[in-house]
Length: 135
Image 1 (cartoon, helix red, strand yellow):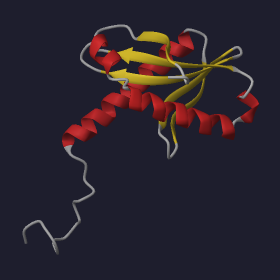
Image 2 (cartoon, rainbow, N blue to C red; image 1 turned 180 degrees about the vertical axis):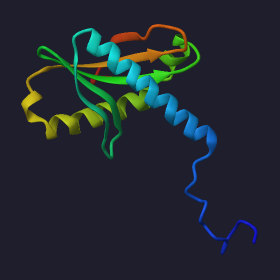
Image 3 (cartoon, rainbow, N blue to C red; image 1 turned 120 degrees about the horizontal axis):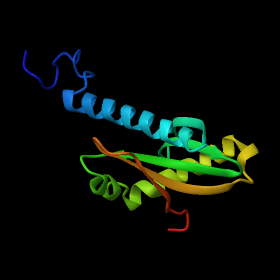
């Protein structure tokens, strides 16, 4: 039977190989970013925090600072930097608001939106205050 209406949907949930590879690359990049943050004295509070507004890759704390970190892995650090779009920033800000509502004990902390750029054979680049909630 050919694909189309009435065709069995048994394999409809199988992800394309490129999507699986991208997912694995993302997980690896997030692990590298988390290790980097830990080495810099941050404590990881959450990873891959999902909300209807968007997802936060990493929520990290250092003293009274709460960092919402977007991790981008690309072939170069420059490509990674350009991958954090304004639309995505707004989704992260919305997700951060949800995170803060569900974790009121952190409401008085200083908040910052960072980006962690990951590229092959390069150290991660941590962009402090890559964007802010007022933009």
